[in-house]
Structure formats: structure tokens, C-alpha cells
Image (cartoon, rainbow, N blue to C red; front, side, top):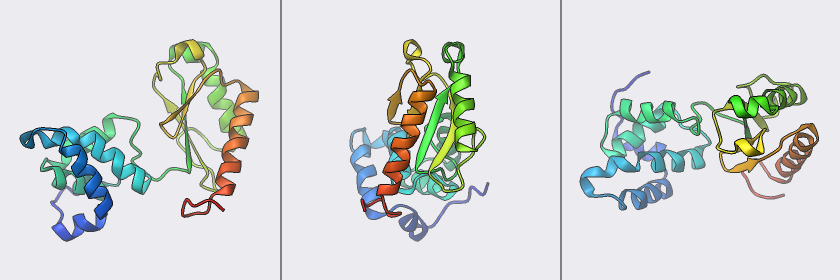
Length: 183
């Protein structure tokens, strides 16, 4: 991966003005000499806008925060909430850690894999779903648990609940135009 600095013009193309403004609001929460503390918030903002964090976006965030690009890359690759490649409209993270696995997490992941026709880590041909394994979601008592788009926690995900969730999300995707606006 090329880690050379990007020009100010390239950074402006990677980070839209609204994105830079939102990042700057996060940076303002920290002392000026610790603006790199806003890296997770900055990456989250970039991902909300672009759907994933590309190597170019990593460099733009690094330059904007005045930190080495490798340090930003380390954050992106450490946390599984950051997408390092494009994902579907709905990212389905199924917990397969021990408590969930013992309560059907692996079975839920397998069921979704078969239902959606993709392996873990893949995206459906229509771009609606990406199926991923997840580390512990902190909902062991609600196992098997899963997370939709890193925001919505779903509990007790047996086949009938998985079917209902997939139907609901497909309907939502059908209601939305490619630009995210409702039809």
C-alpha cells in the first residue's frame, strides 16, 4: 500500500467539505496538540459518507489530523467496525464467539450464508447484503446475536427471526433509490 503523502487538493477530493466540517467538530473536543484523538470519530464520519474507508481516505484523514498514515491504517484494521472494502447496503455481523456459538451463532451464520447465497465475508450479487463474522457483541444472554450496519443489535436470531430480518431489510432496500432517497 502506497503511504506517500497526498496533496491538499487530493485531500479535498477525498473529504467533502461537510465531512471536513464534521471531523473538525470532533477535533475541537480535544486539546489542539491531541487532535489525533479524533481518529475513530473521523474514520466513522468518512465511512458514513463513503460506505467504507479506502486507503486514499485513510491518507486524507491522516493528513487532516496531522498523523502518520500507518497509524490511521492500524486503527482501521484493528476495529472490525471499519470496512476496508465496499460492502452491501446492509452489513450483517453474526457473533460466532463461544457464548453465541454455543447458543446457535454458527448455525445462524450458516443459515444466512445459505439463504443469501454468499460465504462469510462476501456480498450478494445485488449489493444488498454483506455477511460477516463478528467478535463478541456483548449480548451473550441474547445469543445468538448479530449487528446490522454496526448500529442495530438483533437478539435471539433463530431461522424465523433471520427470515423476518432479511425480508424487512430487502423491503427497505427496495424502497430506497440508489442515492439513498426514498422512492
